[in-house]
Image 1: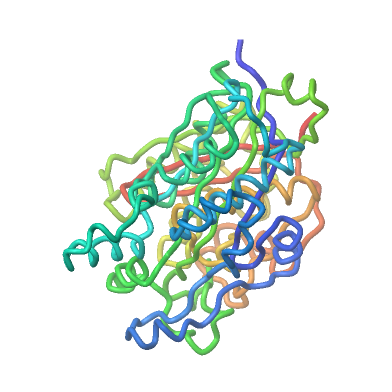
Image 2: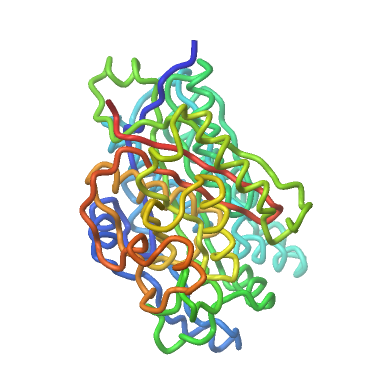
Length: 422
């Protein structure tokens, strides 16, 4: 017998909010976290804006030991630690414990290890100074570093997994945690993902000419999902985390419940029929959405809001078409749709988890956050779903069921269906 899985804790490190209350205020009011980065102009990047959290190392002082803090240099790991431990405490749990929690596991994803840390190691070795590297390098350049830090701090003893599926990483991590609980393999899971876009990662995307470059002097206007003047995405950094629990386990300890995950799907278009390394196959996306709806045991008409992937590239129009085909809905009948990327940019591996936190907050507080920078929506999108379904200001709305999806390089797709807890 499958278990019901509920959401009991949230944590976020975002370009427009370093904690859930600040993040909630920002997404309600359409506050952008995208800023101009002088270094990127010095490096002669085409895109010179980025979504970067206002992070200081001191913010971790009460999260990890002084010894761990002293040697930690990887910001992606740091973002993940803060988001995960904030979610843990938000769920009413204590960090300090001497016991191993065998009923609780962790699935936390990332894309690449912190290349600043890797660069330092390479430079030391090339300079024949490997003895000066210290003992903390390996744990920060291994892709599982973030889960190792989180699970070690909390004493988690169930499944400890680091996943990596490009932009679908965050939602995939949540889906994996959900499935472990649903099928009785765990009682509670810490799930999410993190990303730190340093100049090396940023430069690699900039060389592809897929980044926004026409708004360097107006950074808050640079990320423009579904806009006809969109000229590419804006990279962002951060982390999102959720605590998932077996419903009976949560009720037994009197946990607050934000919502329930009804189901989800993860698949690939196989890089066939239009799918490539960088573009999803439409058939795969449609199948992922329809499979998620079937797993959730709902109807397409039940969906009140779509939290889209919607990156501010030419793929936006095709994504809306895919949603329309999957749901069999269009025009005024289409659900409201929004893209958090308009405010924080595309946080790559962290995108799905940060956006999922935003989705849960909209469900909890019954509102739809605005799409900023869409004063000139793409006419082909409007022809499909009408302007009324693309709010530019916060809308108070009854939301019972919400769909959240992300699509990553490698033609990997993930869709989650969440609802109010009843």
